[in-house]
Image: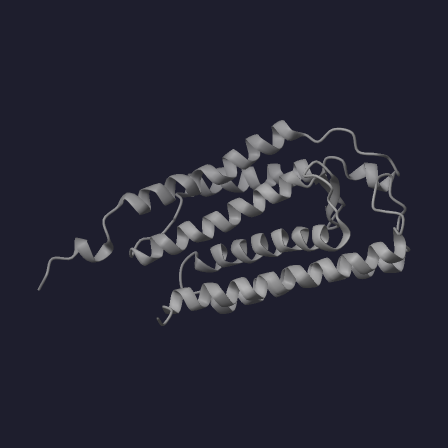
Amino acid sequence: MALSPAARRSLWLTAFAAAMGVLEAAVVVYLRELYYPGGFRFPIERMPERVALVEIAREAATVVMLLSVAALARRRGLDGFFVFAYLFGVWDLVYYAGLRGVLGWPESLGAWDILFLIPVPWLSPVIYPVVVSLLLVAGYVAHEITEARGRSIAPSRLGWLISVLGALGIVTAFCWRSRDVLEGRVPERFPSALFWASLAAAAAPFVLAAVAGLRAPRARDDVAPR
């Protein structure tokens, strides 16, 4: 049976994001073999400055690649936003699955990781970025289902404000322990309360908009037959 255009698009988006995740995992495997042959653990030994700068540039390029594909795949409205979220979520989940398969790391979802380096190191136990990525994937699925009904997920202006503030809170939580890397310490406590409160604020407007969209009748049902 032939796939619908929406299903084909989702299939190719998944393939691209999964390939990006494999590529990311491969790069990190190489880095850990070179700089952490005894295993990745805190306090970590810092890479040479030139290598760190290359890594920062690579991370920035990765985000640009995801944004570019999202822009090319965008249909209308907020579709590009949901596509980028989906690409990011699948990429991150495949990345951790790849590291687990090759290196046996992370040993658990409680293992600390350096998530990002821009503008400062982002640190957290693995479970927190995994939760964010799962929600991003779920958001895209809800978006596609809603779009198939002729509706859309569109938070109000107030909803967007709350969601953006929540996203900033999540970033703050991830950057909370950045000095532990810079000063060669073992991170001790992640600000989980800040993370969960911020995640709830970021997700709630989209959840409410998705529920409204899924409960509404199909758009064609609103049009009187001619």
